[in-house]
Image 1 (cartoon, rainbow, N blue to C red):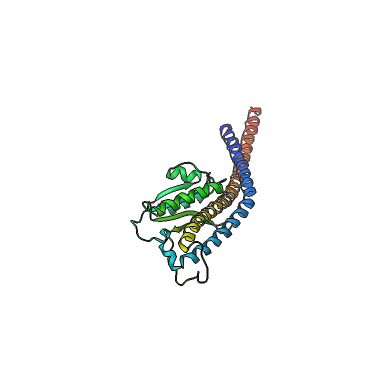
Image 2 (cartoon, one colour; image 1 turned 60 degrees about the horizontal axis):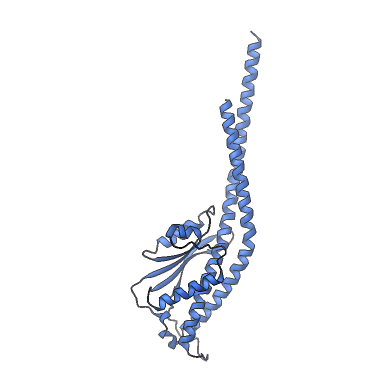
Length: 267
């Protein structure tokens, strides 16, 4: 009986320590969400404005001579994979990996420690990813596409729907699709439409990349907050059950000792 009590006491200490850890991690995630959400909203607005601009340019007949509207090719795909820097965030990372696995034969460029561990490549953290890093990557990706090194560019990231819901998705960035009509009618381009288009594409890929990074980082912290809340509830329930079992075992041990004392005194 004493061995059981000792084991229960050790289990209670272990679960209580885990409860403190999950509570602390939940608080840290909560403190990061507000700032991450603000940065995500700014990046989203910037990317949406760039999307309107590039859609307008893509509708211009002259811009169809741009290499970024090339549709011929061998189907070589390059993916920007954005995942988390740490675990303990529920299914956040696994959802991203599942979306990547559905696209066979793609070359990956990873942002986030977990993505780099899974698919390889140079370690690049998602949290703290800078604008300079994003612009350098966008220039390299656009240059490689224009040179014909690959035929399709996509980005796998996580969309922030709400605090409780985050969904992994694939966004295709290059090449641009031809759009109906000419939205650029009446607009004058200097020096010409194709030059403006080629310059705008780099900024567009950069904007979409930073949007994906900022939104994924906000989603990671929201997912971790929900995961830690769930783990905390489970730990508290487990503590209640262990303490009840411990008290019953302790009460049984005391009762047994009293019974043995009474039995011994009657002899």
